[in-house]
Length: 202
Image (cartoon, rainbow, N blue to C red; front, side):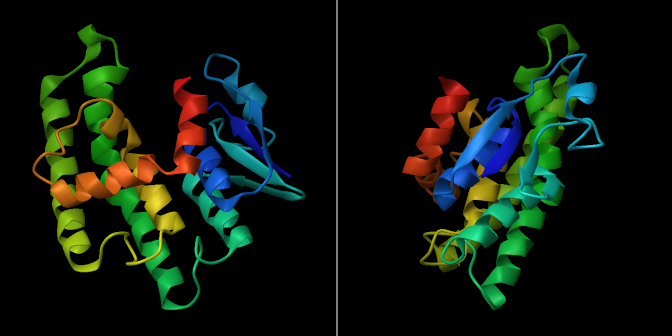
């Protein structure tokens, strides 16, 4: 059984969502934020962060890598083969390297930090960065839709939508990007997403 170390109100949410999409049995080992986090998680993540995952003898950290492993266990259509597998990697790495840094800048300075520690200039720069990436996504979906790889939902959709979830749930303006907004709404409304969201939002 998959064991996901973390809590749903963290990046472990992404892994819970992926496990739900894959239909694989999993257990959440609750490890939360706080001064004891590093000691609590270091056996499975030497970086001292959540999430981490164990699957038998396999130990993994990095939420999106965990999701790729989960999808590989499930196989197609969640993890396709051939060229589409490479496209899954492309969009997953794009989510991590292009979208998440800007989304984090916006999030920390919009709703995560205490109000007196937020920097509006950094929030604005983050929002502009997210918008630039959403413009790329908008153009891509205009050609391929409804999902990132076309007709089938894959772990690439789950990974990118999970990275954008914080923006989606905290009032980011997706109005200029109707195709991206419709795609994201569809992702977070899937039964697996709703099951994961129940753990995070409940």
